[in-house]
Each structure stands twice: as C-alpha cells, then as structure tokens.
Length: 542
RNA sequence: GCGGGUGUAGCUCAAUGGUAGAGCAAUAGCCUUCCAAGCUAAAGACGAGGGUUCGAUUCCCUUCACCCGCUCCA
Image (spheres, rainbow, N blue to C red):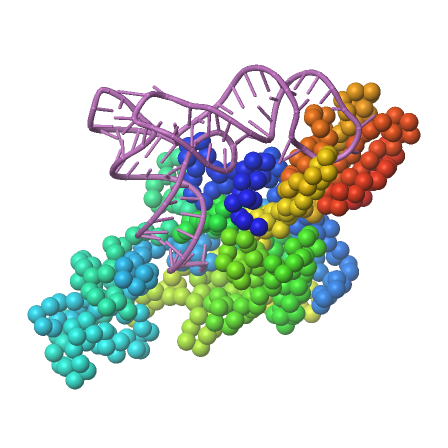
C-alpha cells in the first residue's frame, strides 16, 4: 500500500486534515475529521473499556500473577513546574544546545567541557565528552590532534586555566568540537525546547513559566497518594489516563506519526517489587494481544524487547509494540506503545527529588554545590517530601511500589489501524466488468459508522421503511442513511468509510418485511427481519 | 537542523508573461429493483507574501506546507 493513497483517502473522506490548512498548515499538528473523530474515539473507548471499566477485579486473568484492580484519572495538562524538574524532563527537555556542523552531533551547551590550550601561536578551546576521570587524557589527545602534533610533542601544549564548560567561552569559532577534524564547527547555542513553555497568570512573567505536559504519566504519579487515600484500592492496581501531551518533535514527519500535539493512553501499574517482573511480562503480553484482537494481526505488528543498552536510566525492562508503517523503509517498525518496567524511579523522584544513576548504577539524589560553599551540596531539585510509600494493611510491610507502564499513542494507534484497514480489491460493476474497489477493513468496534441503510430505489414506500430502520439503529450507534443514486455507488462509498454493514430495503421487503444485510469485506448478503435488524447489527459490532 | 524535489478545483492532470481547461468526485434533478463511469443542470483552483513588469499562475526572492535522503526520536 502506498502511503499517499491513504493520506489522500483520509483527507477526501474526512479522517484526517492538516491543522490550520487554510493558512498553509502547521508542521506537526493534525485534525481529525468527521470520520476520524469517531475512529479515534472508538479506539480510546475500546482501550478504556477493555483496560478499566470492563476489567474484572476479582478474577485472575490469563497470564496475571493474581487478581488486580484498575481505576482511572484525568489530570491537568499544566502542572506545577517542579513536577518536570523532579521527573527529569526539565533538564532533558529545556536546554541550550550546540550542533557540530561537521559531525552533525548535538551537545548540551552547559555540559560540554573543555580547556584553553595554545600551540604554534594559536589558541584553541579543546572540548571533551569523556567522563571526569578520563577527561585530562582525552583533552590532551584532542589538543594534539587540533594542532597536528605527536604524542612526544605534548610539551609544546601551553594549557591555560581550568577545565570549564563551553558556556564560559565567548568565541565559539575557537572551539574544537569532540570528534571534529577542524576547529570552529560548532553553531551558536540554540534553545532546544522539547517541552512547550507557557505562562500561568494574566500578568505572568518569566518566573511564572509553566509547561504543557510531555506525558500524562506524571499526573498519575503525583496523584498516587490521592488515589490510595480516596478509593480503597490495594496493590496490585493500575491507574489509567487518556489525554493530550505535547512535545516539540525535532522532525515532525510521516503524517500523524510524529505529531507535536498528540494523545496518550497510559497505565501506571503499581505492584510489590518482588512481583514486578511477572507483572511486566503480563502487561507486555496483554497489550500485544489487545492490538491483535482489534485487527492488527499480521506480520506488520511485532513485540520487541529492548536490549540492555537501550534501556532508559531508570528502567529494568522495556518492550515496544511496533507496527511496520508503510512510510518506513522495508523491515523497519514504528512504535505504537512502550511497556516499561520503571522500578521505583518515579515515586521516589517525587518523594526525594531528581534522581541520577551513580557510579554503582544505583539511583541517588542529584546534588549541586551550594553557592559560596564549594564543599557543601544541596539537591538539584527538591522532591515533594511527601511519603509516597505503600503500607500493606495485612502484613504491615512498607515499601515503595514498583511501576509497570504500558504507554500507548492514541494517534499512532489510529494511524496503524487506518494503514492496516486500507485495501484495494477488484469487484464487478453492474455490467460484470471488474472495477477497483477501495475498502477500509476496520474492525467493527473501530468503524466510525456501524451500518448504513438504503432504499434500493427511491419509491414504492422503500425510503419510509429504510428511515424507520435508520432511526432504530441511531439510538444504539452511528448509522447513515442514503437514498441517492445507484445502490452500488452507495455501497462503495460506505466501503471507503469502513462501514461494516449495509442494510437495503428492496421489493421483497414490501412482501415479507425482511431486508438484506451486506457484509463489507465478503460482499455477502443475507436477509433479516426488519424487527431483528438492530439486534443483528448490534451483536456484530460490539 | 541540512541537502534535493514538489505546490493549479475535493482527487488526478493540462495550458499560458495578457488572470486558466478537462476527467473523476461532490451538489440539485431525472432515470434506476443489488455493487461506482446512464442523462441534464449549476458550482468549484493557480499555497502565502514581496519584487521585476504596462501586466505574473508563469520569471526572481522570501516564507509556509508536503515528499525523499541524512540527523533527531530525549
């Protein structure tokens, strides 16, 4: 399937439009049209129903270590700025960066360190990305390279001053970038705002800066205690949330796949540390099955466990559910959902403050020197100080729960289901000649319109009967009525919209009160009593 | 962010330094008893801004968006 055919259909039929299109569009933002909004809503509702409201708290589900509870939450998009400082997003998402024009590498402006050195009458600021203990050695190696000197000529290097960060250097044209061959390849520092910044308060100043959330997850963590105190849930349990998140993608591309405003469907599942590995595996498999049950069943869907070196600094296991989108190169997959074992990183961060991994690989509070007291330190970002531990009422054990996070992209999901649904086949027209048919083979639960009703011809009382059926269907789910033109054309239009069933009132209806029901994918037709139509369709679409 | 390409009606395409033509779709009506191309009618476009020019959709510049490759994907 070629991607541009799907993009064209999405626009033509009203699944997806470019945001602000009449003004030329806005990169990384997309709107859902009349059909798209139903598709996305159906996807989100299916998720909420299957994960939250329909969850059986009492049963031990296949693959689960025990019964568990599920509950929901809906947090604000803007939260206290400290949330993002403790979660680590602030440091990661709001930095001045410099790019190396030669190696195309990007560095944090305040983290790239270096030292002034002079040789052959030239003065250069040599930089390094080496760890502190290897720093001196690496600087010397790079300095020799900068001046084209040999190791034995190291005494020709005249070092000047201490190792300092790059932001202390006024003239970047004298900087020698790590791994570069020439001096002066770094760009001027540029703000690299991966989080959307905003102002809280009508008279807001820079001090009132706040951020649009880059993920919904943090809202769940900061409400962990509220949920515990208000709902009688016991570990193990999960809190689910759907909602918009915002990230300044560096390169928005590939239709809606990498949007700057997007919707997430996230679960934070809290469990005992001893059980967390089993729960991780449960959620990984459970979430994979959810996609296959809704029709992403083919080889284009895969579950991929991350390698150890791919894991985030806090994670002890992550799997991605990925789809081979048509716009990706052959054999490549794009992420639909990540299932991450996050350990106790998040709850601890909001108790203690921003954590970093120390030399032993353990998480500890990140500290910075106190101004004027170089030998003393303070936390870089203070946590809430609240106790977010869990106390088991039976065993009286206190512990910080571990978290399993199945985090899905609603827009990516919708896009994958659209890609999977697009089919072209050959069907005969009224003269028996084969014609290309475009059909969106969406799962009935996801289809924007569940059924369409047609009078075969616009006379003999057929429209009246069809309209009655239409009204009956409308009380249960989205249905569509059409009496214009040839019936074959009406069928084809519904095929493009992904409508799974078409109901046609014909001459026989007038005699025996039955109508035909036509299946979108097989084109098979069968007769159903008018009184049974709603039940027939309802049983097939839910 | 860099390099290359593209931008005319809802879609697919055409022509032109003197303000654009078609097919399909869509709309209204007719005809139609089961899978889009029977008939009639009316409607609809040069991505945006600036420049050159008597005059720009056409030439130039800028910008925006999309596509391809690299980078990025925290």
